[in-house]
Image 1: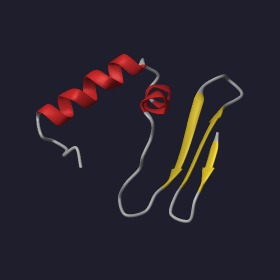
Image 2 (image 1 turned 180 degrees about the vertical axis):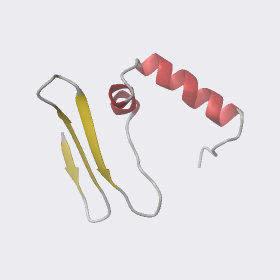
Image 3 (image 1 turned 90 degrees about the vertical axis):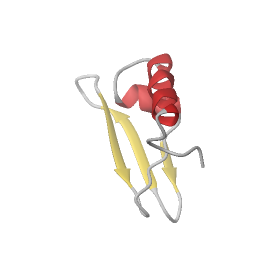
Image 4 (image 1 turned 45 degrees about the horizontal axis):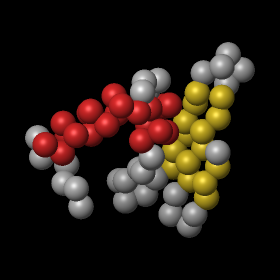
Length: 65
């Protein structure tokens, strides 16, 4: 998957040994990934990502906005 815009570029591909590799270019200190892509990046499940995101927002480590 390749996504290009004027402000960001995210490239996700699989290496020869079958591992997922993510290259990210970001500006304004923000990187946005869908939950499915976060799960792929951290080699876990979407449910696990959702659990961690829920905890982050409940602890107010991040705002929903």
